[in-house]
Image: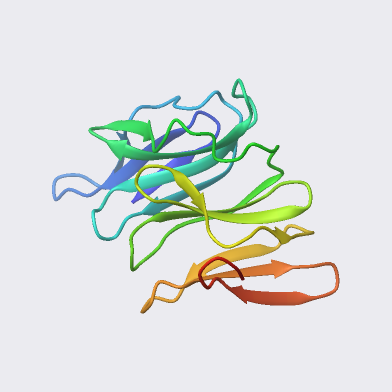
Length: 168
């Protein structure tokens, strides 16, 4: 089991032993953020067993979204690329697609929401940005096909979009 503390940005696992009761053990390096962690999400790649963490750091030199994975005991950025060039107002979801095993983000700036996936080299936008208001958004996948679904709540409507190719 893994635990993320956003106050000091560290992750721990719960290990079990026949000799003792369960105890927490740190995983990876602590203090891997500038300290302004919010909206943290922890996901496990079920195919590889590698943990990923995403968060918004408003105390970084340039406040931005970060996604890291555990590599040889160190939390490592997936890319040096900035995920969004616009100020982020909310990180809604971070998930690993159960079919292609790629990390996906759903986040919002002032008035639009975006879905991006990491293709192994860079973050690429999935579909087009869509008008967004409010803080109720969701991202999930069809477990058989890997098709991403996004739920957004507009001021008066609830709409489900299916991402197909280049658009919604």
